[in-house]
Image (tube, rainbow over all chains, first blue to last red; front, side, top):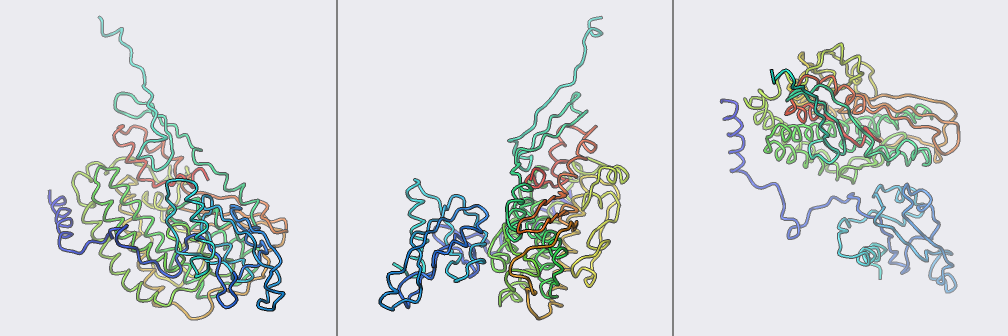
Length: 144
Length: 369
């Protein structure tokens, strides 16, 4: 009997302390800077283009092969505004099979990709998941 | 006489794979005689993803991503033997700070894993409150992990020659807040369950296994130590910086469900002791050693076993040169511990079978790989 009372005392004590949970959709979690959500490209605000040159290293090293990148000639090289001869054309991330392992960030030679703080991917349709993808590529870092 | 013509037959009960208390997708076929279990056959493989085969198609540094997903409750403890094996093959020296960081996060992960066991075991015994308390404290550890590694469960944090990031700037403040919180949490845990009469009646003497049987079945970790065998790879086969740290290896004698439970609670205390020592002794220096840019080990094979929260987690790594491992064999402690389940369950009542399964603390991701 004594053992059970001891347990009851412990549960009673929790009446006198602050709640430890947060009311999620209303209160947002306080994410630390290193929090690894989905990867996203970083925008080079000085030049007005992404850092990514489309070299495909991330696509090759990705354990789940969820990245698809293509490269094109950079139109800004001609007028001298940019030093990047090649630039990313398309960057697609299959968010449904990305495991957020951050291997792409580690292997990138241009530091052009970063783990964003985006972690909410629940949506009502497949199209909306694609929208999430648009949002990830560059916009989060102040791009267009 | 009419009674003499009645014959009794054993009944088969199929438990799982979707049973909520099988801790994953695990099926066992129980042969019961009335209320007593006569025989038990485990059926595994529902969560088989072919981790070992997949690893052969990935470059060396990507394999940790897969190993995280074997024992997902103690992901950092799985990465450790792999990177240690690779370091052996490559002859890479690890800076001392990196070793301390590894031990620090591994021990915190051990506490998180044991807290998960504690919560689930309480729920198996019919007490739902301990689950909430365990998760409250586990959440704090995961907040710390979020700040250090970026992930909550899947960290992908250890690298050949060190760790991926150094600790964050505010790690000392975070840890000095976390340690007393956990210490109080463990006291709460003990007060809730350890003396509860119902819990004692349900667990003492249930699912007993003798030390000799345990050794025969190849049990390791807390399940073996609960039988009275003092075997802990951190002490008996020291690796990393464990020789410099002070900790006890607790053992119990009966080898029943209660001993396995109590041992894990005691282990959490010891892990907390190690975490405190890491906090005090953490040296300065780099967190990643000199590592070749392309990881291409010479031909050879190596086995490294480390102490996972569930037992000896070993990696047998074979290299034939080149960028990809030739073979990554995982010695999974849960798999070996699960094999002794039949021995533990025979003769017990069917009401205890969930409890016995819970007490050996399996993770199906690691059993099936």
